[in-house]
Image (tube, rainbow, N blue to C red; front, side):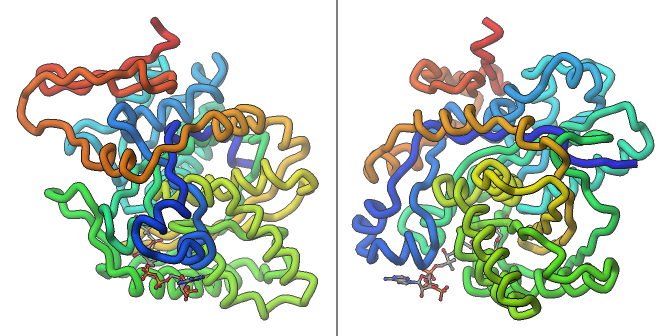
Length: 391
Ligand code: HMG
């Protein structure tokens, strides 16, 4: 049975900061951020967007009535959870009006959560071929003002509809994965910003890639020449390139040029959004599919997922006939073109805004946020979400 990605939705908040301006205000040469790190713009989430609303906005535009009837499992990968107990998936299930006869859960393993969700979805559909699974990867990356990780923040969500006979990409049979208990990046329960050992995290990302790449080659016999492109989890766009360079000499010059050119295209959206943790790899895939017009059906795309702590996985997919017709290119172009730039002081003020941790009622100004679905406040310790289109 063919199982894979039937639809892909994406959402990022309407605000961003320019990395050149952030560099100037941090007394850093702008090229460090734009070339050395490889980021041009960084998405800034207002208080009215959290992991739940970002994910619900990402999924809102891709689901039709038939999908809603068939979705019987919502899997939400995130490391920006809003509740220790109730899953973010239950909120999204309600906001999207999905049928009650469905499972809804949250998965956590840093940036790897959505990949785990996809693999779980694959198993579910193998058992229940008529059903569809909604997999969400939604996060807000926060390291703190004036930290070395600051330039690698971001916010956004990707929604993937996984089904049998998918319209966009069939996931191939094999996977290669590994786990090792390391402290490269983590966020204790009491912290609202990540702790990170930056250089170590870079090294581990590459070491895990080399391990799972080698395992995948042994399992499948596939070589670099068999891939049209390889997409990476992109905490910043230079990171994937560093990993890719370690295997490039396995191919001919033609292979190297093709894979590197496609890598550049696969970073387009990540470059202007920043790290979105769980959704990052799939945002890279979306960049490639939407920004490269002549990518042929039948092409094999490699996918490298990495979640600090750490778990890494390599797998691959084959593009399906007419896959481009099922992408939301116009909608995503509009989303990017309608964003508003904020100044560095404005970004800093938004970054420092927090919600009370007592039972005080909170009402947020959702009129300032153009998103259809917003986090509107807290009443009786319960988070309130508004779907403006359902008013
Ligand atoms: P840093 O230490 O400030 O930067 O922060 P640096 O000094 O290493 O410089 C970065 C690059 O800019 C270097 O290039 C410099 O040479 C270059 P490289 O040697 O790496 O190729 N550079 C310049 N280039 C052009 N013109 C200039 C210039 N100046 C310098 N004038 C660091 C970098 C990534 C460590 C930091 O931002 C950080 O800690 N980020 C967060 C951690 C991270 O993203 N790690 C990535 C791997 S772990 C991962 O992917 C998982 C994650 O997504 C979390 C999860 O799983 O949940 C993070």
